[in-house]
Image 1 (cartoon, helix red, strand yellow):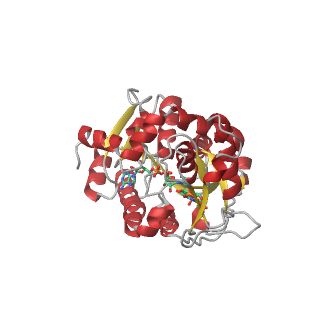
Image 2 (image 1 turned 90 degrees about the vertical axis):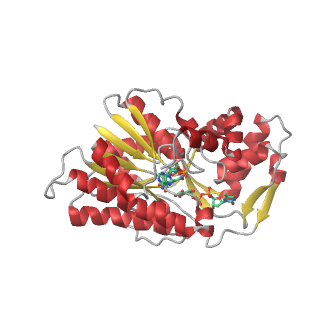
Image 3 (image 1 turned 135 degrees about the vertical axis):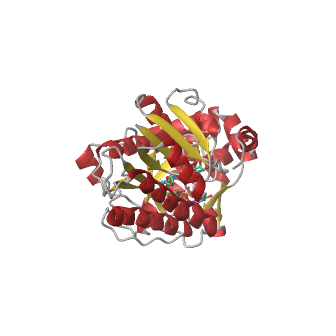
Length: 352
Ligand code: NAD
Ligand code: DAU
């Protein structure tokens, strides 16, 4: 089976690529990625020589490029992760999110249909699996959880673009019979995440004695999942989920930002041999994010009950592994923040 994974050089995508390349040697995994600031082939050095792995540099927004790619490789299935993913960037540059997340998704759907559908018939191997976010459901008050049936109510340009792409995927199923699956996951954390998101940014700043910019009072709540557990959930849904269905993925692990940051600071004090309380002094309350969603909490009982998926680590275990990874991969961190990898790979792969 030829499986196209988009966005495989990014944070979650690189974990998904690694998982599929290693676990399914009889599949050929094609990783299509534009290598934006967030995509980094250094994330995949351990699999780049594998005989069942091919990297393709390219932009999902480029309609003719995507059509040619499907015609050439005849992908059997798609796991679609490529996207602009950071809420703060979507507030300052929303059109980039419309292009990558909406137009890019529709390009992939159109080419998949052209390649797969013979008079509305699809092969049993064909799946268009779209990786989405719990942010499409909007924000919660102090109680309740997002279910698969929760109405969409996206609040940021990022979540609006992801909600739109979810709707297009569902429309391709309803209108053209495309065999699709969608999953909506909560906040991921783990190795190889670009240090603009809360956890890697704060690890980086603590290490360098820089201020920790907490938005508002820091009382907003997020539901955190270890990225390796997300990759396993994607595998579980890809192979076992029902066509046409949506699955929520989450770790049942809610944290107020400020409590999470204090836990992170206390682990960092131990790791860096600092006096208890040292890192917490770096906390600086800054202006709140515009339209900041109050609380996310995901009910993943459908995935747990139907497909028997469970998270493998507690948050404390996952956070410690993550901190250890960042502390031992200083070169990676310095290179992604300075853009050094991007310059190297720009030369290695010609621009289209
Ligand atoms: P990321 O920003 O780390 O990686 C995105 C990848 O997509 C990068 O490698 C980038 O180069 C690539 N990309 C962006 N635009 C592209 C384009 N036009 N053509 C080809 N490649 C392009 O993102 P992430 O955090 O790994 O998220 C991956 C997916 O999972 C996204 O769809 C995101 O919405 C979703 N998601 C993320 C989280 C999270 O907590 N990070 C949670 C739920 C869902
Ligand atoms: O819920 C899933 C989503 O989680 C994914 O779809 C997104 O791609 C991913 O980026 C993430 O979105 P968030 O906005 O929740 O993640 P972020 O790490 O940016 O912020 C987490 C919380 O921390 C949020 O309440 C904002 C706050 N925050 C964030 C940053 C970067 C701060 O207080 N200070 C910061 O500097």
